[in-house]
Length: 115
Image 1 (cartoon, rainbow, N blue to C red):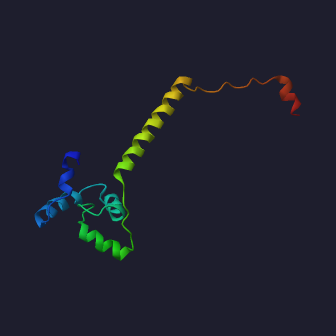
Image 2: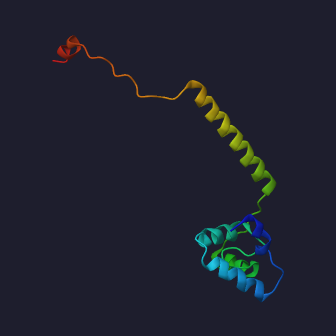
Image 3: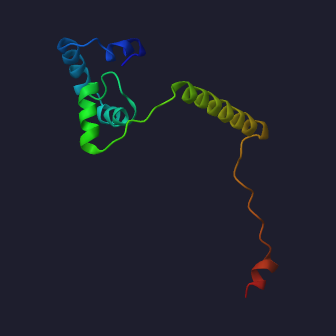
């Protein structure tokens, strides 16, 4: 799905919106992952083919507690992680690519000393 369709997954109440979203979700390859995420973190919206009320019921049946996500914190964390990874990659490039290690030359005397 395009990010442009984000608002579609937070519809006003009504069966027609849910039917349309259910059609989209039914063929989605990450539907199960989406639902697993939503059971733990999403209070609102349509996720993994379920609405908020359906997920509340599932949480109660499965004993899952809804966890609060601080999206602002997560975005800052992701940006910092990306910055660190870029710095690591840049540092690796300064050293040059690693090639195969040179083999140690073996002397005849080294071979004879093993016997």
